[in-house]
Image (cartoon, rainbow, N blue to C red; front, side, top):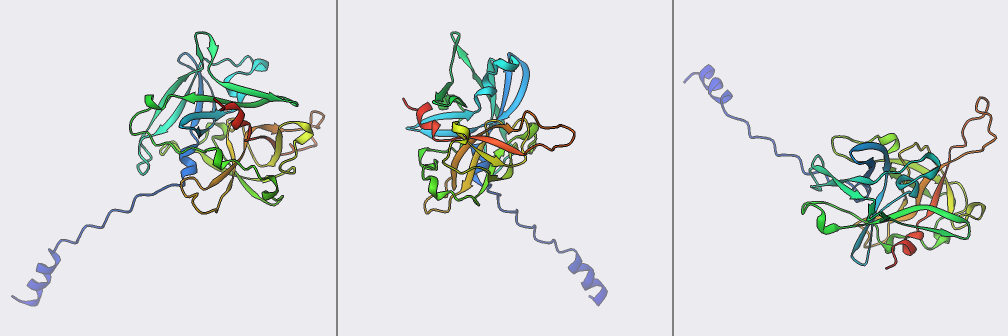
Length: 265
């Protein structure tokens, strides 16, 4: 066999197939925050944000109260749909899960108020046994609540996880994160109401989103975030000149410890 023949023979040797890439494991925060869509029957109304909260083996969806009913705009859905992932690594697998808002004419959600008035937070208990068996759910718990106000200095970096204007990764069905800063002292009720202010770029559809900060404490790898609040709405001045003055860019976030009251059995 001459050199030319040997070269040709070597070229027919098949290359070893490349090893498949390792599965991508996303931060569990993305799997704790489903999109919330409101409906009247089959008619879609609005898109919003929410997150899972678990207490005493009971699972809840948390969102803004005005997502479920808003008398001022006559927004009155009769059911919601939330997104559920079916695989923690193949994030393209997901399904919608429908939750009725009324049973026998009575609202199924819990809402609350305090000395400052109504609180724009609502929780709905979910029937976990009705979920698909493969459903992947990550949930905040009472241990994630930030109860030490002094442990949140003014320069703390926050994140708001949600679906602004319904925008999200439509292939992997994941929310997006927006950076935020604390704009009023954490632990001080802004204007005597049950919320604090954040400085962040937000949009419609973010209502009900979790406001969180990173938790580096040992043993928090399952969901390494502290839950500070529930994003509600943008804060602006009623007398602002719409031509000369930009929006304040501030937002209301209701203190998340209200969840202990709303989920008390």
